[in-house]
Image 1 (tube, one colour):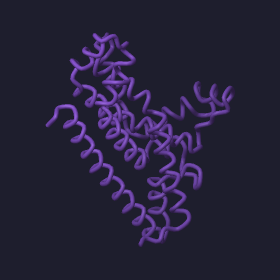
Image 2 (tube, rainbow, N blue to C red; image 1 turned 180 degrees about the vertical axis):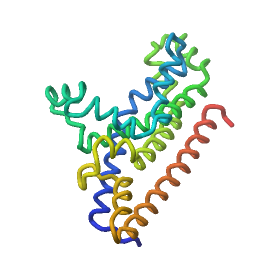
Image 3 (tube, helix red, strand yellow; image 1 turned 60 degrees about the vertical axis):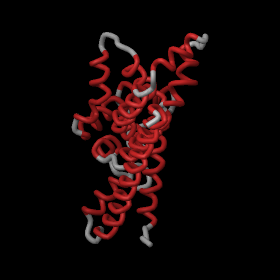
Length: 231
């Protein structure tokens, strides 16, 4: 059994906390965005889709820098939140969760959108003809049928959050016990003498988590397609 040091375990626990908060906080917005992209056509839909997928094309360090400018102590949003709500992101674990949420958001939206698009619209229309209001149709028909895709997307976003590095280290640095996640801990151990063993242990754990997430996501995706299409 791998013998992780206290510092390594702290980084792993923080990564789990960051990833869980990132996915939980971004899930409602991701569901709403995915539904808009899947079910509505409106001016600016292409722009919205481009903005959603922007973190996939931008260098992560650019995303981290933009987050620092917006949510830092002197940022427009960050200064407001700190002054009025006492919520601080810069150089805090909350900032690491925000960076992870931004980087995982495109994967989450894409998976949910595909799941919603697979739902037969005739079922939604049938519920509507029986008197169900649109929110009720969504809650009782669309959402249950797309549930596997939502969970699949959440798993992928969780794995992406666990591996986030560039935006995190740019936005919140690499502070042990506060912002040092699994990925930034691996980076630190590769830079210090005698850190190769720790870096290898954490890299192995990261690979295992990623493989498990991919397998689980694929299984959920297939299960969801069988549930919707009956095949």
